Length: 143
Ligand SMILES: [Zn+2]
Image (cartoon, rainbow, N blue to C red; front, side, top):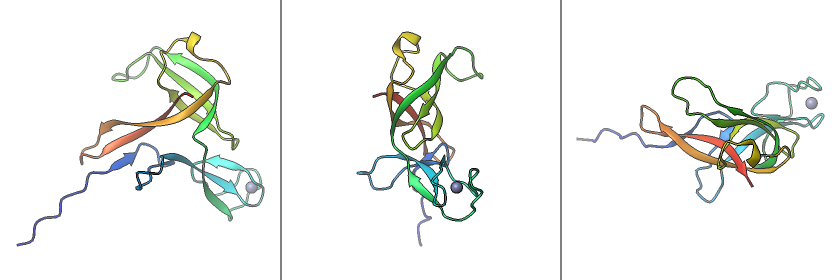
């Protein structure tokens, strides 16, 4: 009698543009799209370029895991179950893409944060889904 196949526990990204390479020597990264026609870069997948309206030649690219803190806000009230305070931010990547994210690895106090400070992407398992897979989220921390 054959054994029932057991589901393999895996890691699942919390957003579709977070890539988690299977090879453990490769770091997780954010995926973007570059328009071959005009060079515009976007976060995540695109059906068309909003700068030149091209619908072909949109290639997936690996975005940098380092960027600069563009703006931040310390959130003191959130949805039930979301621990506060935390730092909500927009990080600019060198490809010209802005990423909404949280800033981790620092006390949520304005004295620890500076506009333009270098930050680096990190990932962590934030919960387990119903099938037992780790759900992986990304954030940025001071570099
Ligand atoms: Zn374009």
